[in-house]
Image (cartoon, rainbow, N blue to C red):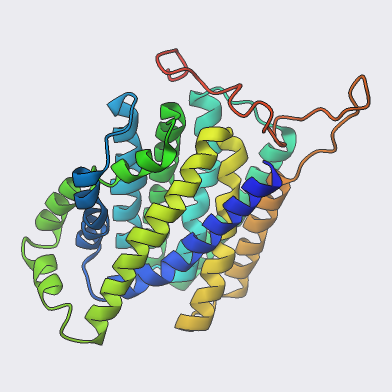
Length: 326
């Protein structure tokens, strides 16, 4: 990636890291599946009224919305509601990065550099350390929370692949329309699992006190800063670069998430959890480092598969309708 696009990726990292604090405050008041529906409905209504639908096959938009929207947040919110610590949730969810790289290699036939494979392998080891820590901390809810968050990361990876296949010419509009997909299935799930009136009753009384007001502010941050701004910037990067180049950047989100949770919520990860976090971040940095470019025939630098691709940003993007997906 170019320096400017690395700065864009860092901005997304900060937005998504702080997003976990907003989720925690919202989950302290709203049930998880209803909260997921609410955070997307806030955007879906104005999008349906004022934003033109994106061009391209609807199936990739559906894959993006169901993966990155319905399942990612339904699973993540449920995991955090049953006891998954906020900072660790921000870390384990970044399993989407190795999942995305794996799916990109298998489904999109994207080539991986050796350092990317090594970096993702190290990150996976860090994830396993987190699982071990949660198993020791709480044999029941702790492991279940990790499992649900990992499934959320896998769902996000499938959404990333849908976005990559769509290759939208207007990523921001594509991201906005993704928000139209999750509300109805999440409301149906909420009615079935949480009760048909539980979430609506909470919403009706949200202005009655500080917890409700904080929850509403949390929903606003999740909808606007995380979704509109964060996913809009992320969509531009995913449309321009291979998934294997962009996805590892999300592994830096836990740096913000864990630090913010420690300062604001007083969460203090164990040494094993911190070792896992450091391992994950180290693998991320290894996967994102550029290999020194060999000199070209005239002394110019050639670009490897993991370096800057501004000159030819989409040369390996699969064409919609080909056999890129088996």
